[in-house]
Amino acid sequence: GAVVSQHPSWVICKSGTSVKIECRSLDFQATTMFWYRQFPKQSLMLMATSNEGSKATYEQGVEKDKFLINHASLTLSTLTVTSAHPEDSSFYICSATSESTDTQYFGPGTRLTVL
Amino acid sequence: QKEVEQNSGPLSVPEGAIASLNCTYSDRVSQSFFWYRQYSGKSPELIMSIYSNGDKEDGRFTAQLNKASQYVSLLIRDSQPSDSATYLCAVNQFYFGTGTSLTVIP
Image (tube, rainbow over all chains, first blue to last red; front, side, top):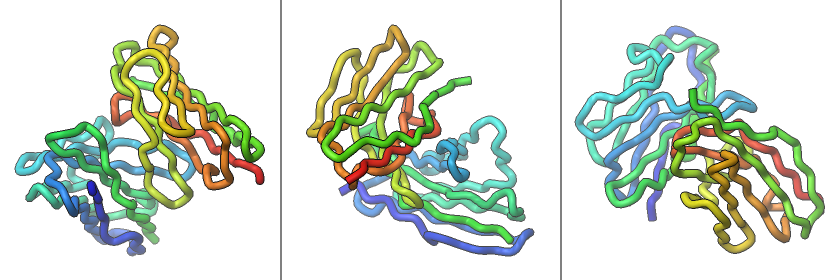
């Protein structure tokens, strides 16, 4: 149980385009979902926290207008990287928790490359 | 700013040996501590969590927490080549260290 999926697993896009990444909890209701970014050889950095039906809470230094997060249902959250640039190339990972546990269940990650 | 520090390694141990991974943190009021394993190109997998001072054992893994010293460690007994990965320490769920790369030599 407690499976989280992400789609796509990797994406290559041109500079200036927008990319949407989906995060789904497959067998539980995710009251809270989290989005992280990880650059090579670096730590996971929390970008934002989203609760179903409410606006996401962004960490300091993360541009909310550039990284749009939608958590429209208890099983789906999306991250849209708008007007992507090469410096946005990174590994984006989502995680989810349920009401019954504070354990984070991580998705497999999405590798974004912006040309 | 909450900081979580880990020795980046690489740490190499022979198969069957004990691997010792360390983590220090700056936020004195931290309450929860997690160890994750991350293979290259993959997302983290939870190994174990610890909330109270002392040791917590789960199979070949033992987490040790010392809140007074702001220190948490992970011991891996009988290390296997499949344990070769980067080990991430996380404090209060969301604050991750940069990880320690472990290589277990057959």
